[in-house]
Structures are given as C-alpha cells and as structure tokens.
Image 1 (tube, rainbow, N blue to C red):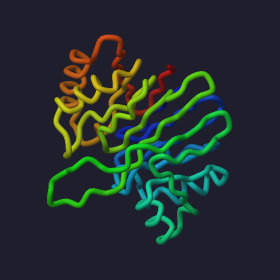
Image 2 (image 1 turned 180 degrees about the vertical axis):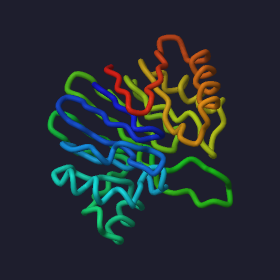
Image 3 (image 1 turned 30 degrees about the horizontal axis):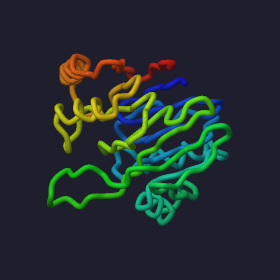
Length: 219
C-alpha cells in the first residue's frame, strides 16, 4: 500500500492495483492534477472534504473513476450536477474495486456543538486480498469498527475534538500504523505540538508517522 497526502484529509491510497482518492476538499492541494483514478470517495459534505469548485475538473480528468459518498453528499452533488453521477455507500454496504473491497461503516459526523445539526459521515474500510481492514479513513468521526485495523488515517485536530480524544481513539483502534489527518486548520507549530504528543502517547505496537502534504509513504 502506498499513501500520498494532499493535505488535510485528502489522501490517495494505492492498494492491490487500485488508485483510490479520499476527501478532495478545499484545504487540500495537488489532487486536481491526478489522473488514472479508479475511485473517488467522499466521507461527508463539508467543503474541507468535498470541494465542489474543483470536483468537476477532477471527475472530467478521471471519467472512469467510480464515485461514492455518504447519502447526504451524494444527493447534494447529484442535485447540483457538474461533478458527474454519485452513488451512495452507506454503513453496512460494500462494493468491489478490482481486487479491493470497499466497505462503508460509521454513519454520523462527530458532534461539533449541540446546536449544529449532525450530518452523515461514511467511514471507509479497504480490504486487500491479503489483509482485511487494510486501511480505514473515518472522515470526521471517531468510529471504531471493532476489527483489527492495519493502517489508520487518524483525525488529529478539528473544531469537534480535543487532543485527548485523538489519543484515545488511536488507543482504541490500536492499528499497526497510523498517520494524522485533518490538520489543515492548524499552524505548523500547532501540528508539531499535536503530533509530538500523539507520538508519545500512541499505544504499544502502533507506529505513528507523519505524511507531509505532497509526500508518499509505503506500508
């Protein structure tokens, strides 16, 4: 598996011959130049995860890529048009992408504030032929799928969370490897503080690593 970061929550996962892009949002950069994608997956409707201004060009450059999102986002994108037709992947549903199985889980965005409505949020699990739950992208949630995770995209900073929640989520998931996402809202100094603390408090047996925007890491 090769994971490339485009900043914030946007990552490209290359697994078992499939090229899968997650959450191309407005706090990410560089994904718009990608071609040869097999799938574009969006966890939820917030613009830092789904940039409606740049989605049409991305889809036009990748016409053969399947497009899945949570129920609310798929409905919105299909209503506005311009970014192709989007399918729903709800919790409990799955589809095959060559040798990879993509599974939907979770279902709801984390609570930002009791007065702000909670939106749909599909977390995505990728199964490879040689390892189930090879990768988990939870979007804006701290959903535990109650199975062994190999590589976790770890929400590390957000208006809906504090650092201790990221640490507790990492300990609860206990993946083999984790890397931080959702850090586009932080300064460089803030990211350094957060990542240093998470690394110090990661559970035994978990490798915590940082993938800088534009960089790739093989797992």
